[in-house]
Length: 265
Image (cartoon, helix red, strand yellow):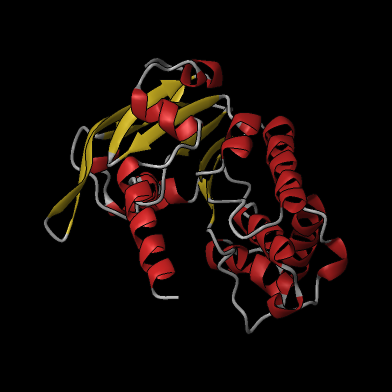
């Protein structure tokens, strides 16, 4: 880990209702690059993300932001850090009762004292960036799933964040729409020089956009490095995930249930 790293995670452990869900997680997130955190459902990706954006408390020495200990941040420091972040939640997390323009304007109204007209211009700029400039007055319910994701991305970009966290961008999208969102994320990295942290379980998407991949399983880091390093990992669990092989236990359970179904016909 070095000065090129914006975020450093050092032996992060996490618990939920007394049960440990992250075990000694250690890796670094480089500046101005796309870091993809991937693994099967329930492996700890979202819990890790909650620590990194300050929604879940972190112990001293476990996470450093620009060399500063996140676990020792005061409330003021934590608020300042969060202002540097943009977050695209899995479902877009738009407010259904207000228009697209009003959704994008929320962070600007909460965190700035800009004039209404300035906010309107800025929201239009963000919607234009994600290809939705003609949908300013639309309600979220009038949009397709892919458009809602793009609208959520526009809101995440409202404050011109230094770091963009993206949770399962391809979830619920068809392959063509998902590929378009992947290209958009890469364009943002190139044009705005942002640091992106993307949580996903989609292999094709991960290897397309990642500069660095962190593979997790059961709360532990199985592999971390450039995409080719991870692809060439000799870790059996990593190779199983990359080859999309089911667990033998799961296969046996499915065969058992299938046999019961056949017997009941």
